[in-house]
Length: 209
Image (cartoon, rainbow, N blue to C red):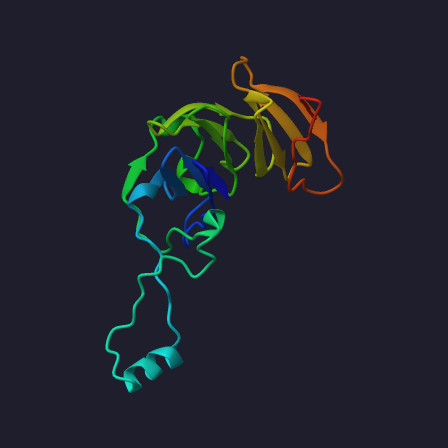
């Protein structure tokens, strides 16, 4: 889920795709072999009402050849935050990530975690135990951070610190990264026994923890 203007947007990645991200009016999905699938949200086909088989049979029985499916949602039309814009549209374009050589074995990863740094076109995602930084405005890998010894499970950002991101990993560690620094990782935290599947920011009094 993400926001687009004043609308709440929930997007589900198609089968075989990796994690998704909304940047501006584009929805991006990581795909195999280091590429991005891109949807222009303004060009998405509105969702049409689905009629049940019994409704279609009843319409045919009554001599109605074509059912009206102009209603663009099956949800509450009075609630703008609850309108489903679309479902099932094929992606509009595909872009290959540039500078893929910065990511070891880049083609092996589709990934599960992806987060946009606040007020930026920079994003961080998981590539096994690596955390590449990608500029989604031009599909370019800017840097690749190394420090985890097992797969990254989650990535979080916070508006309170727009230049940093937080990762959790199966190596039982959470790490805070600042892309402005030479080595990237600024803080390492030990988690509980076993893999650390998620880590979250908590902002108290304007300070993230």
